[in-house]
Each structure stands twice: as C-alpha cells, then as structure tokens.
Image 1 (tube, rainbow, N blue to C red):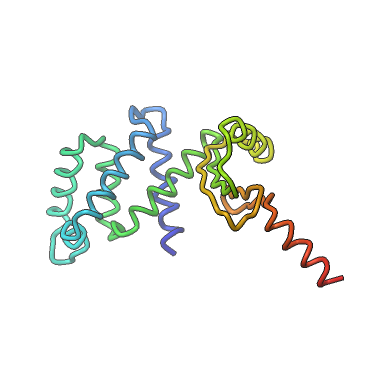
Image 2: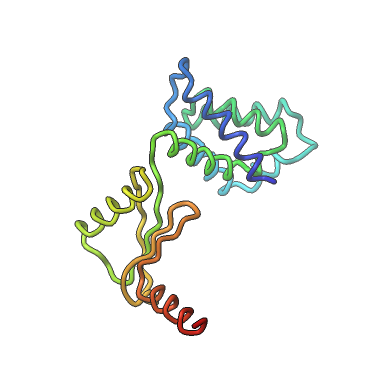
Length: 182
C-alpha cells in the first residue's frame, strides 16, 4: 500500500520538477529529500512531532518551513513536505524519495545495477560489464559493486527485478537442477 502511495507522490513531484516552469533540478530535490530523511533519522522527536495528532497542521508546516529554510531547500521540496505531512504520510518519505529517484532515472534513461562479483575486478572489467548490461537493458548503467566469495567465480547483476546470473555458483545450481530433473 505505502509503495503505491509513494509512487503517486513521486510521479506528481516529477511532473512539477520536469515541468516547463520549474527552476529546480531533480538532483537538487533528491539531495534535499535525503537531507530531510537524515534529519528525521537523527531526531526521533522531530518524527514524533510530525506524526502527532496533537500538533496542529500549521505548527507542522511551520516546523517543516524552518527545517527546509535551514537546509537551504527549494520551494518544491518545502511544498512536498507540507503536502506529505498534511496527509499524514511523512513516515513514507523515504519510499517517496526512493520512488522519485527511480522516476528520475527512468526519465534520464538510467538503470541502477547492483553487481556482486566473486573477486575484485579491474576498472576496465567494470567498464566492459556495465557496457554489456547497458546493451541488454538499453539504458545507461550506474553500478554499485560488492564482493561475495560464495559465488566461486563470475558475477551476478541485479537491475530492478531482473537478475543476470553469470556466476559459477549459479551455473552449478542450473546443472544440478538439470541432473535431478533428468
């Protein structure tokens, strides 16, 4: 449920940010949302105040205006925070930010990949792997890397819900299934 709601907010935010009248860049909004999320994580009292039915909407709005002003935040971010707070959705701000990042990536033709390798790989191998994933997905790849010795060899790439398993562990599992199932 909260993911669907976060998606609606993020798409509406994208329409504002990508609109012809907007002077605010999407990356700026992402940075500002991340800063607010960090502030909320660092201050449980702030979250309690924003969630409390005992605190009036005007008080919450004033608090959010001050927070945004202290951060040097844009009017777009301030307005989003007010709307989200007014509708009691401040607790899903992290999901909204994540969903907005996905919308921005989609509009820019970018896909984020999580790549796990058995061994550290050289920069030129990373470039080749990202280029191959780019050809498969039709998008520019922004990759994060991690290492997992359990893969034995090769790599596993996750782009959204797609998983490309080129690991030795994956190949052994496929071979085992074929042997068991005849």
